[in-house]
Length: 386
Ligand code: GLA
Image (cartoon, rainbow, N blue to C red):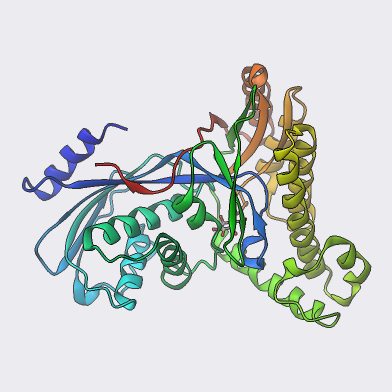
């Protein structure tokens, strides 16, 4: 993106003066390991080249000003008002991050901020983690706090859990904060140990398919799944002490699943536990260059999310099931929280045009919506760019 245009807009909004700094944080796409992060499990996301830019400059006042190219809503907030949520406005993400800095005892300064994102909103590509991390990284750098990257990642998650009210896990903030070009991050969400796995697949690309179905009520349904997992864990503890659902492997679960009396809760646990196993198998397959196995695991992940976790919906099912029909598609599944948003596919480069030509119209015929397709570029994590 052309940062000169963003800086010009910044000056229009806040006036001329000292040169502002520019930061960028990417979005992410998760290859496999869905709804495992808040269950202490494994995930395999990567940072993508779409993301959020932040142009920022100290204003010498005891207030923060926020504006964005993405929404009309602007805010000018005095320090005394910083801890108040502003309806369901986008500024709650940066405000939540500032709130965490204040809670950690950081002495803040006033800043003027102008955000601009090119992540499709509500597409499940982590526009929220991206705005959280761009704010956290910029404030950390501007205020010279010396807070470590991992703590900034935790601040992003805490902002979302405590300020916004979405009980998300750590995957998105971690991928956005720690992403590396050409690599997926194989992350243990409990210990935060991670390994970079190369995702350059000769002759194949990661393709993101956007259903353009906005995620509706996603936060409340997401929080409901988090509760169902807690309830499943409680029941499974009758078998042996477990810290998280991901402490149990699929075979043990299947032999004991009837200790969970509620069928829906049992299904949720079956998804989480089997998905966690699929991440381990997928990482092994990727390391061996075994794309066929990788694709089968992605397809199985989608079906588990559809049947047991019930987070796909007709649009994601339509786009994924159509993609499966295209020769040259190694595997495809929904990505992110679900309930609309995007799917991810691994596709032979020679078949990408065919994918778009076949899936686009078939998807439109079933849903009345037009899909978008992007070939993902796997990029770096958040940082200062100017
Ligand atoms: C959202 C959350 C993540 C994760 C995914 C599902 O993106 O923010 O923490 O739970 O859903 O895997």
